[in-house]
Image (cartoon, rainbow, N blue to C red; front, side, top):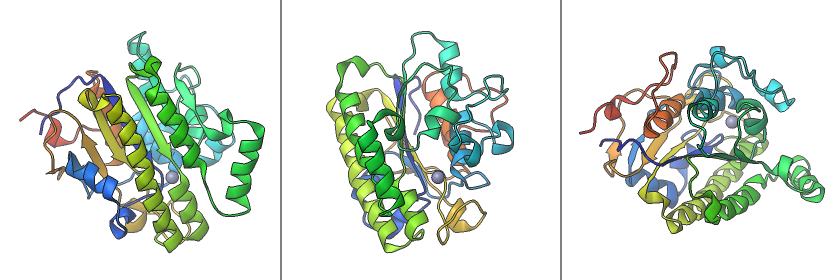
Length: 299
Ligand SMILES: [Zn+2]
């Protein structure tokens, strides 16, 4: 189930707050994705099971105590320290090659403003930093007053435009973050019916994105990764319970055997190692993220 490194492109689906709850509802797109590649249903989040900590580890390849990212800071707009010993894979890649094309479409804007360094040149999009005043007001009103987060819809439609634009065919790293499942977990409870219904909506949104990727031919030269930052318990997450820590990791691409299982111990953080390796880059020795042992040698 070898990786055919290098791939031209790595696409990461970063599905916020899903944990392993997609097992509890029909998710035909996620199921199909899993069966078309290699997957782990024993993957773990890093502790604490918060978003900035986990997306920080996914994007910086080190544990939270090293990258130091916290929700409160990134939500307050604190940018990532440019002098950190633990730069993001975005910064590593842009330092490594001048003509690399990077993109992040994030429903939660702190990914673009606090987790990825501001010095990185990338195609960035987030609803609350890129849409007009009225749409931003509407999104906040829906979220705060109606407890109905609809950030992902607009991310998906902007992203599909991006994918279809021929100017973007050479993108090498594309991070796609969806947030409404997590928001429904906070609003109604992780595992509640509205939360599970939102997972079904997310599944159809993923189908829309995967269809666009297919239409532009990116399946032939991309490694596509799918993971989540954490689950939740009650209306919260951050702790160490199974419902919060249990996550998944799935990858698909040329060379990866369909229906194969990743049985080694993996974390969502390992995406950072997978992404660099898949793009033909060295994995820094200071990384905590590891290539899953199944992919250490092509077989
Ligand atoms: Zn989260």
